[in-house]
Length: 361
Image (cartoon, rainbow, N blue to C red; front, side, top):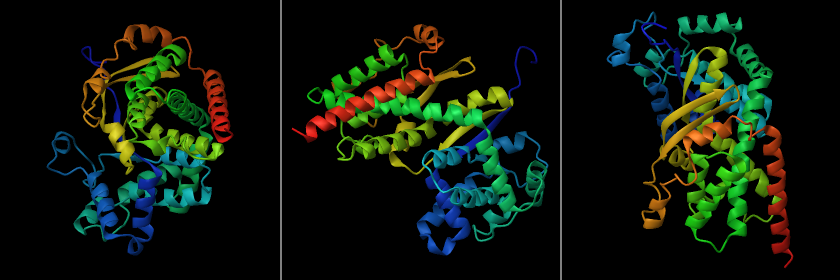
């Protein structure tokens, strides 16, 4: 701390989902088989990692290597997404090889060749060698994958994050089927009341999802119309995994307490629904309470929702959320993993009973 100010190490990070990783892997390994539009998208993304010499940040800092990458690329979410979706580990490691190639890329040559020359930068390659003890990308990828799986604490915290989101999505589905005669506005208010009173949390992203869902704009995320009940729960759970990408900013700021590095995460996806939800929530403030408790307050931007008097009322959350009171409640471990799992089982049973009744009457 100097003159009342603390120096904080911040690392800007792109967090990629499986669709983006798949596109990069296709570009790196099977470029001739992918469409020209996808090629251009990947090239544009890779070029966005490079800090131009005319950039204000570049001018204000000294770099030992002019081939500088301003944004780090972190495959943590990709590995966790594949782990929870039971993807083939060998396929995950293959894709990690492409991400590692991207991390060691000679960006200057890549840009000058319009993406036709992909080769390693010697300085970045040495940095990777110091970290993993090898120049072999196959060995590095396997080690990186094992490192992710050995971090049991982060995996546990991530699984809890997904379970929490899954619980909220299940509650939205339950309200929709049991209160089907109510207006979208009344359903959203029921969601808010439940989040505030029963769960003890106020989740802006999931409330925004409920607004879309009750107006039939995001049905594939919560497909209660499907016939197979197990398939319903599987799709909703996978949706929870997808939505957890948007929570990686808070997730990694929390992990920064352990690593002494504050990762400023930028989620990267091509999923339109996720992009809309992400764009509609602007960070307002952040609170860190204790080791396992970190949350963010958002200003919701409702421009993508139909403009009407009813929906304008949704912007006023004062009835359901008071930051000071919420801070006190949040300290009491209301959202313990055991509580979340119990609530999940109760709501799954409720939805199952509803589907069984409808199917047999």
